[in-house]
Image (cartoon, rainbow, N blue to C red; front, side, top):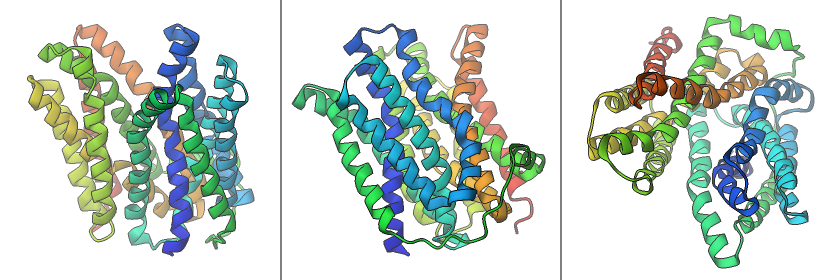
Amino acid sequence: MYGTLFPVMLSFVAMGFVDAVGVATHYIKADFRLSDTVANLLPSMVFLWFLVFSVPTGMMMNKIGLRKTVLVGLILTVCALVLPFAGYSFGVMLASFAFLGLGNTLLQVALNPLLFNLVSKDKLAGVMTFGQFVKAIVSFLAPLLAGSAAVCFGSWKWLYLIFLAEAAAAFMFLFREKIQERGEASSSSFAEVFRLLGDGFILCCFLGIVCHVGIDVGINVTAPRLLMERTGLDLTRAGYAPSVYFLFRTAGCLLGSFVLSHFSAKKFFWVSAGCVAAALGGLVFLWGQWPLYVCIALAGFGNSNIFSIIFSQGMLHNPEKKNEISGLMITGLFGGTIFPLVMGIAADVVHAQTGAAGIFFAGALFLLWTGKKLFASME
């Protein structure tokens, strides 16, 4: 089993490349002297595909299989990484980001169900969390590697060569691996896939993913602004807040990969959701640099395992439809677009970032309700 997991974890590394779009956008904006509006088209070209192609990917997996879907995702990722070296222009980078987003959608949808075929049910959440830990390392290192490439080689895009080598290695290792996929492929229409949301359990899982991702993105957008508003820090110093969040999120993933392999997912979910709720409540009411940093760190730690637990519970609830459910869950990543918009409106209405903090605190309370729904039948 562990030998088979190696190429799958290499694919999780490739899945983490999508988190480099933020730092890449800053360099591209400077290179081509783009306005903020035009530069923001770049990350939009990545995350749009989660909304558009997640469910079709789930349907495609039923036809060609999980392993082949991951391989196609890796091919698209390789194409995205090669393009900037064929010709570096804004149009080429739009195409590169589009390929990266499309490939990442396939990886996001297919990799977790692929793990379903490799580990026992009681180990699934733990192994999924370890995959998220591997992905989080890439998220943490990408800005550092891009900066080093810019300083040492004169261009940030040499970062893509590192990513290209890893994606090619992941493809070759997984291509050689034979994986027996459990269950027979079904054939579902769009209507049948979305009809799964009529199951209260699946709907709860979907909305839980929306809230998890919304909180994830919302904290990274709002935390620096909260620190500047309440402590007087400048942008440079307040800008460390997302790094603190990701650092503790990465540590939480590592811890969760071990804890979830030995202890109840139910208990760990309550601990995680409780940490998130306490932290985000603190961001609504507390002032002072250190209290706010503690809340940001606690939120990162608590939110690190929510995704894996909800995702695994959704697939275990209806294993025969795990591919379709995976597509629905990844569609929920679009919550990263919805939450910041609503938070911005709330902040403008009350003329303070407390309004934005109140929105993601409401999301944390919903996660607590989600836990009650998901684990109601468990002893």
